[in-house]
Image (tube, rainbow, N blue to C red; front, side, top):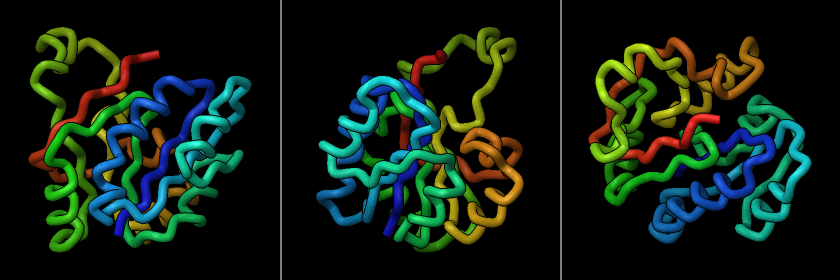
Length: 167
């Protein structure tokens, strides 16, 4: 079972797009719970989260990790959308692996090579699948989901993600 954590601030539209891509995982029984960690939104982020059936909490990612019910966590940026086929790939990975993993960018969503080289990489752009135990250990020194995901050695999943637009 998988807990999805989304750290957000003033991104109700992006949150709605991300939550829509998770519906299949909830129906299949792979997604156990979705936790929206709000770091100070002044828009209607709480309304979107609560009406989608998410657990909404004001606070950072470490608070969300403590509330997660699954043994594995999926960290996503608001606005990111998982492409069809992600459920099977994540279920297979969590059944046999102990290391974190990231999704592959959707082909139509990839920036040209030089744009990727010279742009600032966001550590959560491709999402992150990580064990709750490892995430809890990393969260002790990380102040955000982005900091938690930065610098981790990961495996590449054979499932695609449409990356959230930069802010």
